[in-house]
Image 1 (cartoon, helix red, strand yellow):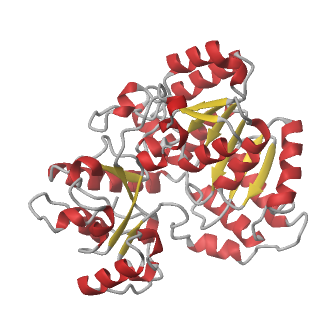
Image 2 (tube, rainbow, N blue to C red):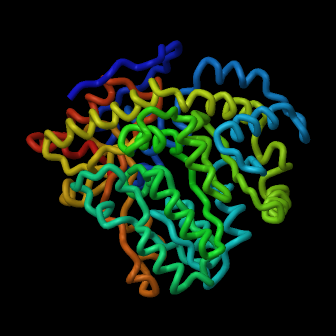
Image 3 (spheres, rainbow, N blue to C red):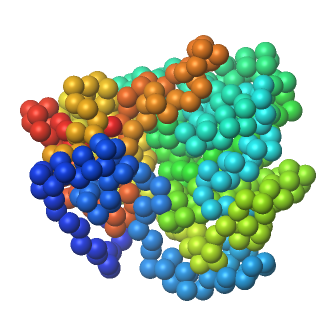
Length: 430
């Protein structure tokens, strides 16, 4: 179990406050035992989310100073648009303030009551936006993806046979097929290029568009390079472009694989749909050349997109997650295998069933997030009981990028999880 050196220097630091158990007991009570209501400066290591927590690079901070805040036609937008198209060559790039806003734009236009939208596994905001439009968000993960302890190179894949059957039986009710890369709610697991192409082929054979939620597109490309036959000698950029070449559109949170603290976009090839989306954007986000973002945010995203495809960084990030998963596995902590690219998933229902979730923050002041039955949406309803379910109780250990996490922090997290230490078992808050 080895780490590798960070491919960056840390030029700026921020002090953090240490708290005692007595303080944490009081703070937790004051927050109504709701970890989301804690003040972040009372949390020693905050792993509540990976979204928007990246430490931006020196070049990104420099780009912030070039931001143009013109209401329409700002140079910042055109730099942002060019950076997106350099990786994902869609015809229309429509900025939004974050990924869920892009999802809202898309599904408010294409989804309605009686529709069903399949995916490998919908992320919670995707599911929420689909259901808000009255449609059904249907998960079709492969069987291997539903077994956390099973080692499989592409557990994030969609079940192509199930997708083909759905399209044959209910194709008229499907306005589009969705693919999430990596499969965040499925354990941060990658999707193979062959599976992406297979899903797109099925969608197109039935005359339906194929959309990609691309939040972790670079990490997914790295896994493809490592694990898929014939991809080892190709660049990350080449794999990314091939990934999106088969898609008709995408949603994106730039708070993930663009190293930004805010932002996202909807990309489309359909002229009519893009025009509708821009009209809706003006109502909810802003003019189409800023989409609810400051020009400096657009420039930070543009620069981040040039940096995320760096192989040294991707190697470091994926290895850091694998390091934690290996340490936890050695401590008999039930983790999702293999480790994903952006997070380590712990089966909290199995591991910490005897401890109330909020109480797990008391001992080490490490705040965590969770994916489980509470976020399953309508897939738990009587109308959808035949739909594949996610294994409930996974706890998502999110590892923020770059300077936000160091090996000592990773060792701190994993060292508190030994089954031999009852207090340490309270570290991971589900």
